[in-house]
Length: 282
Image (cartoon, rainbow, N blue to C red; front, side, top):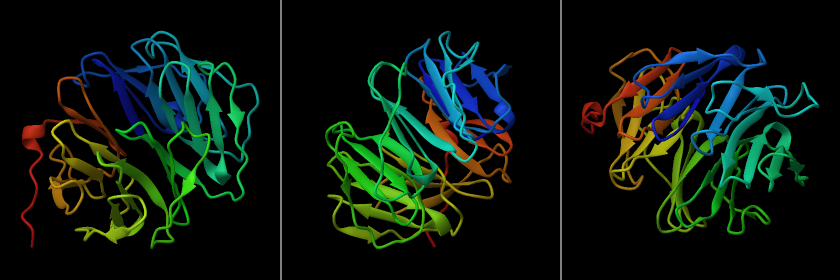
């Protein structure tokens, strides 16, 4: 499974071959729902307990109006060369989809229509996330980090000291962010302009991240491991996924009851915060 997202106790996870899993008890129990595609699904987002979206390879966009019980294709045209990689809604009307070759789609009518924004360049965009201050952060390949303060009407390119792929960003409360990507690379900025590399305890690909309700930051790594920070991303320590020490984690979501849901190549795991123990620094 590749992505997980929830609203209240309802949670959806998506992955390869069109797999969609649904939980109505914060991830304690799961069942499969039927998707009208066998394409790999890479992202999922619940706007509320009824409306949900899923996106994936070959430009597939799916919509559910009953909380993920049933799904329908939401776009008529299929582009076999385009992979949509992340989806975000700010409210019931305003949403974004990002993906390969600089694809950036936006909607202002709840997904009835999508408008593509043309790019001067075409890096793969891997992740879009809303910040606590209402801004947006966008990450991708070639060290791409962009920030918007006006709901994606304009984007500010931010220069970083890294030319590899960033798979995600975790915005900080005061306007900066932690960005992460290939080979365990982590960078942190207080203002989005001056970046400092954070010492990483792994060289594994860091694919996903989450800011927990208690303030800790968690990144997914390989070989059954997570990276956890208790100081706003200034330092990270390794933690082990007790459920499966061989799982390669891909994404995270914190359920309504505080449990952390994690997708991996082995399925979906539920982690209790009390069990998220980090290794001592060496």
